Length: 294
Image (cartoon, rainbow, N blue to C red; front, side):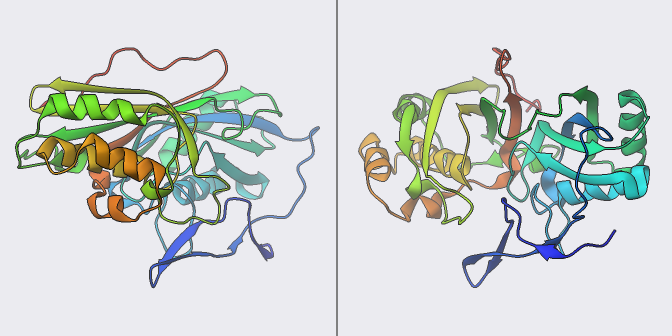
């Protein structure tokens, strides 16, 4: 499928010399007719270890790019594009990412799900496909997102790709107390690299939960949206609090002043999962449970 190069609203990122650059990508310019096309909603899980994040990039393996390729095999020239609820960083996983696409097809949603899964690699799975309103938008209509991060207090042979193993002793009570400082509306410019696609660095955090589960420390963060690397830097700073190297005073300074210091403590992507994207009338699961037993 060929088309002219142009810049999308969500220009994807590429690191080069420490700078974030926007690159053009090829997409089909054909107009979508409301009479001929149906919109479908996808619920997707993936292990992000082998991928350079969600968003399609040239010369990089991504989740969106892999699904686009699978959809092209299923729908051929009838297929147009796919839009996710948001981007996940390189190496980050998803329990339930949400996306939508428009296509002219007579296939039932369940048949679409099976055909896409037949074409996808083992670490990406379409959990469900449903037909939805043409007005539905996976990103714009989302009311909140929740992420879960897993810290392991011991070395694990089986969970390496799904945790951050911290050898140092961590003070759970201090981490739990410090986490509450992130609640509400704050400016997270110190917790994110500059990203030209982001209009604002202000984010509303609705809830933060921290729980001990065996040798794991689980951190769930629920917010209106999240900016690049924000969750991993919050987790990294909380780990420093647990180590006794940072305090509540440091967190308040980062939230009220622009500084690059939190970047030094960015948690690895292996322990991070996009848990759920919610829409009007939906809620986050109440039970915070580990995703792997350690």
